Every structure is written in C-alpha cells, then in structure tokens.
Image: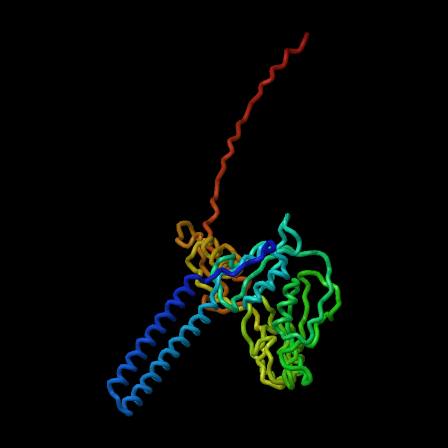
Length: 374
C-alpha cells in the first residue's frame, strides 16, 4: 500500500450480528413452515389448505419486511464512518480520497516550514473521528509555488469539476448562465480558461449551465446601490428588484450588503430579488452620565464607541458635585452615530489661594569722619 494511503476497516462485529440475525430469521421461517405442514395434515380438507397457504404468505411478507429493514439500517449505518488519515498525501490525492467517500473538501493554505510543498499536514476533523456523508472537512496544506495549467473541466458535472479544481488548490467561485444547449448543472467553461497558468490559492470562476431561462444571482456586495441594482436589472438577469435597507457595522451606507436569494443561487430569469443596502452602522443610545465621576463617564462612553469631551465648571468648596459630571450636551436616550462626541461638564474644586508676607529689614550705617588737621 502506498505511503499515506488509507484502508477501510472491516465491520466484523456488525456483519457477525447481521449474519446471526439472518440465521435466526431462517430458522424461524423453517419452524413456521413445519407448523403449517402439521396444520395441513390435521385439517385434511381443502379449506385447511387455503388457510395454510395464506399463513405461509403472511410469514413470507413478515420475513421480507425484516430483511428490508436490515438492509436499510445497514445503508444508514454506512453513512457514518471514521475520518481517514490523508496527512502526508498531496492535496490532489487527499481530496480525491475524501470526495470518493462522499465528504465535502475545503482546502486551506497554511504554510509550514519543513513540510513538502503541495502536501496535507492536518485536517479538521482529525483522522479516526466519526464523520458523515456530505460533511465539510477542512484540509490544511503547504502550497506549491510551481504554476500549473488549468485543466479542461467543461462537460463535467458541477460537483465533479469543483472537486477537481479544489483538489488543485484553486479558490472556486460558481456562476451560472442561461444555455439551452448545455444540460443544466454541466460546466460550460472556466474563467480563466483551460490551459491558463495558475498557482495554488489563485481564484477561478466555474461557469455552469442553468439550462434554458435559468441564471445565477450575481454577487453585488460592496457595490453602490445604483451599480448593484443596474447589474441585477440588466438584460442578462432581468430581475425585478426590491430595495431594502438594514444596518451594517462595516459596509458604508448606500452600498449593497447582500441579495435574497443569495449570490450564486440559480433562479428563473426575471425572478424577484431583494437587494439589501447598508444604512450604516447601528446608532448608539447615549447613556445617562450625570452624577458619575469623570473616569466612570469616560469609560462608559468608550465602551459604547462614543467620544467624551470634558470641560470643567468651578464649584464652591465642599460641593458634592466636585469631580462628577454635572451636565451633558446630548440628552440620555438620544440615538447618535458611532464615534459621536458627547460633551461633559465636570465639577471642579475652587483654586486654592495662598498669601505670602515679606519682611523688610532696615540697616543703619554710621560713618565717623576724622577731625580736620590744623
């Protein structure tokens, strides 16, 4: 077995139990048949024979139901299995291993020194954890820097093409277009086209047929309302657009947030579509600040994303409002934009007046002159 390959573990216990169940059912059926034969011998009549035939038919129906239940239970059980170990495999091989088991693969670039390029170094969930069919598995791999040619995936079904391109480490975006000559769900082309040199982690668009009169809702996030609406109402889509606004913390007011149906959804051309446009971030309710200390008021404003601006009002000595907010320019309960300025007046103690006295010392100097000479 090649390095990194995985093998399915035999379900010995489950199979043994199932075989035992079948043996018990067979024995039970034999017992009922013997009993039916005895009843026929005892009855000796035509009516008794009909009764036995009906009884045998009932037994067969019950046994068939039990077998069908076991088969369905076995199929249901098979949808849960242990996550295989694909660490050390190339991204392409590991992705194929997982998709063959019915798992959805999400390749994620994560550079790790010392790991070979293009190989998987961890998965989430990890190996041996129980997973289910169609479960999404994150596959972390060390990217290769060598460019490669985009394969030709036209005529493939959408899921098969996505698995192949993601297995190469490409970031796949799916769009559909109306094409009555190509069966719905079949790939028409890629953008960039087959043969283009790309690297792992590069984006690629997969254009899939929506059949006749079917189109995919295009992505319009972050476009201005006018541009987004023009795109949706263009001849390509012909959607009947209804505009609604909603708050958004990061998308500027007047820009598109999303659509309903969501981008990528295949719908009939001309369908109704709701375009959600940002009204900007949610407004903030100004809290009551009067009576709080300056530090408390400033902390509360910062917590709400508001900016406090303080001026001081001198108060008489001993006033209980010294060091506290005595007024705010925006009343509490007002709705304001984030980062708005709220001006506060804080009580301030009177300035301390100091008096200094100066003592002047006078010094008297006496000079004695000598008597005149004779």
